[in-house]
Amino acid sequence: MTVELLPDLVLCVLLLVVAWSALFASTRRDAMALFVAFGMIVALVWARLGAPDLALAEAAIGAGLTGVLLLRAARKLPVSSARRFDYRRHLGALTFIVVAVSGFAVSIILPSPADITANNFDSPVAAAMPDSGVSHPVTAVLLNFRAWDTFLELLVLLFAITGLRQLFPIEKESLEPARTWQLLVSWTRTLVPLLLLVGAYLLWRGSSGPGGAFQAGALLAAGCVMLRITGMLPPLHWSLFAVRGSVCAGTLLFLCTAVLTHSLGAGWLDYPEAHAGTLILMIETLATLSIAIILTLLVAGERKDLCS
Amino acid sequence: MSSLAANSIILYLLVAVALVMLGLYGLLVLKDPIRRLIAINIMGSGTFLTMIAFARRQDPPDPILHALVVTGLVVAISATAFALRLILAARESREAAASGSTETEDE
Image (cartoon, rainbow over all chains, first blue to last red; front, top):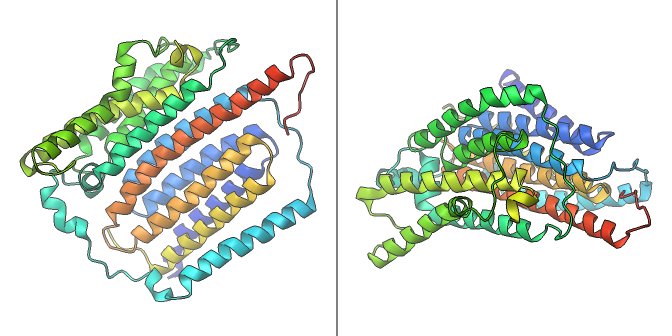
């Protein structure tokens, strides 16, 4: 019993310690580095909990891209001043949190503590799998059963990029080109082809195993971000049709599919069974392209990318 | 895929609650905008951990919750990117407003 719990205990203690130090590290740079480490540990936890799709996505998005995003933004912010410890403030915060969260937890757990770990569910997903066109349940849910979620999620990405474009000041652009570090350049040369290969593999693999559009898109975005940071990739000017087209491609194909399936009588995003597999692969490919370009612009986009 | 012990699931649920509390505490106490963003992200991880721990109660883990969390991760990074841009824009406009008087502290 205790031996079985050991890996979980180690992961949980690591998770909490790293989360604490990511918040309260003495310098902001340490905090950001520890947050990247936190993302990697979360990815391990997902793997332990039987969610390889999430482990892949978390390692690429949660740890990698968010880390780059924070580090790049922190470059332009002044160094934060030392914390002054104010006991009343901390006490008030602690009281509020303990009351709020424990009240919430108690109201959930107390009525039926046995339900928390009961596992007598019949899964409607398993019953519907043969009609989905793919053999991996998570992909089936993402792109068939709950395709609306994925569609709206692509819209969220579009909104984010639109919002981002509005927030650049009109007049000045002070950002000097980042110094290219020789080691980074040679690592980029080695890693980017590998990332491309693994990304394409994950996209293809998504229909039958862990992987899919999000993971592949995040990996491709990581490659693009590396190329962009080292200056090997020219700016992705927003005025280029290719950039705008690939940003919108996933959403547009989704929309066309929805309208077509509706007008052919089946219902919004209710794929015909015979073509479900092909449709899902097409949508996934374009969604990967959109996700990769949007994430690249979100993470590494500068004024000359987004406002020209 | 063998099913995880019920104790482990309870352990992960408790850790999820602890992560949400930790993130909320950081959000209330810290003043540096980047650290506050990290705190929000940690709260998000706690929420995701709750969902995935609940998904693990079935033997093949519940794919619906997994799919929701994959979606949630992408939404989280776009929100983070947008928030960072807002922080920088606020900083820039404050600098533009206080042109002349050097304002260094941001707390």
